[in-house]
Image (tube, rainbow, N blue to C red; front, side, top):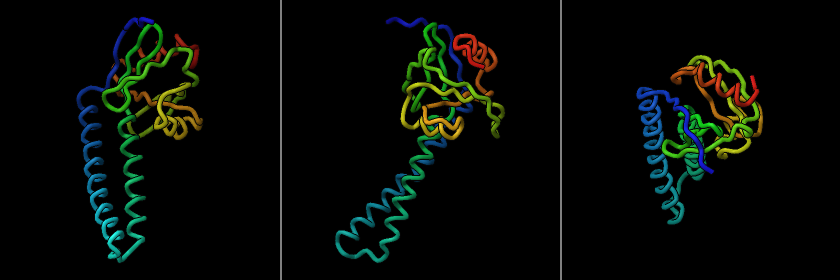
Length: 166
């Protein structure tokens, strides 16, 4: 099936750089935590681990920072509009196609970055289920469209007219 491109909406260079720098910082923190965890595992294997609770704390920190990193990577996706649906940018360089019929809910939310819309869809990634749960209270994948995206009102008009949601 050939899909027909209409237009692209992005957050621009500033938000793109902010996203990449935030992800890079969290990646470096995670790398440091992995190094510390590796040292503690080595000590545990050799029988020289003094504080086993430190191992648990490090594992918890890696889990938390990893989840935050996943959230940042998917917080402000760029969006491409096609005749057949939307393409949503996931994990910086990959795109997922969402047909118009797979958009289930369009909710309005306020946040520190301004007004935003949460879009809940039938399928995306497991990381997007967390976004759907936090912002729409649904166990379905979702993504945010912040009002900072270029041509926000035009994009919302297209989504509303194609899906019949408001």
